[in-house]
Amino acid sequence: MFLVFTVSILLAGRVFSILPTYVHLHTPEEINETNYVILDKPNICNKTRSTEDDLIIAIKTAAHDHIQRNYIRQAWLTEVRKLNIAYVFILGSVTNDTLLRKLLREDSRYNGLVIGKPVDNYYNLTLKTIFTVAWVKAHCPSRWLIYVDDDVFLNGNNTIEFIQSMKNVTDRAIYCCRGWNGPITRDPESKWFMPDPVFKPNFYPNYCTGPGYLIPPNILSSLHEAAISNLTQPKLWIEDVFMTGFVAQYLSIKAIHLKVMCHGPKEISLYK
Image (cartoon, rainbow, N blue to C red; front, side):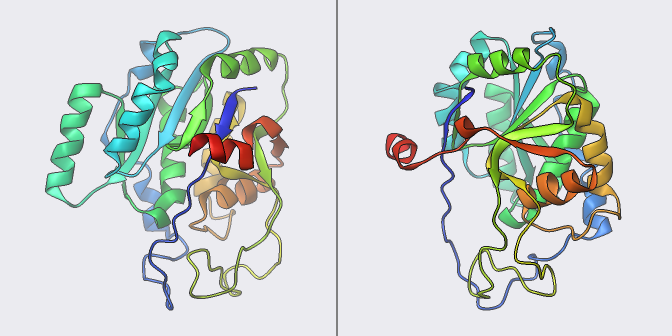
């Protein structure tokens, strides 16, 4: 349908016997940081298509990963630009002055970087997602939001066709490849360690897996308000489980499974 295929490349990275201090439930102070923008694109939705099938593509990307962003610019974003669809790359803040200068030069050349105040790292993806929803709510409130990783291939034409097919649908739903599992591991040496005191049940609420999900404009505001509310707990660092699981469940928003947004061995082989 609209995602040709998604591939989430999960690198084990460092393995911790004790979780580092930045792996924690997000504090109110950190949630508050999602209200602040360092590098903005406030008018980006004013310069592109304005029809009943409005769409904004938000691509979450690591600050240092300029090579991956360039791959995307030369691949499926060529079609997106022809279709005049708005898109932005979403990054967190950096403390390295050299990297910040590189990002500013990149944005000067290509345009399209949006940088929020939460620090850019894997364990702040929940903050990056809350920031993204807040940003779209502020600048593109009438648009569908498709939020994808930077290792996803997106078919812009088919995405628009899907949105057009949903124009008379009023369901409060998020469209995605749905996950049903619980904590991946209780092993403290794993990157995906979930301590019992943080979340004891064996299963999460139904949620949308991280590579990408599509959010209609009628739920943007309530998603953001619930995400920053004290009523949605725990504020996990696992962004897809938190936003499309806990927050969506609190709001009685359904995660609707679309097989075309999932990947299997064939798609992984093609990607490689």
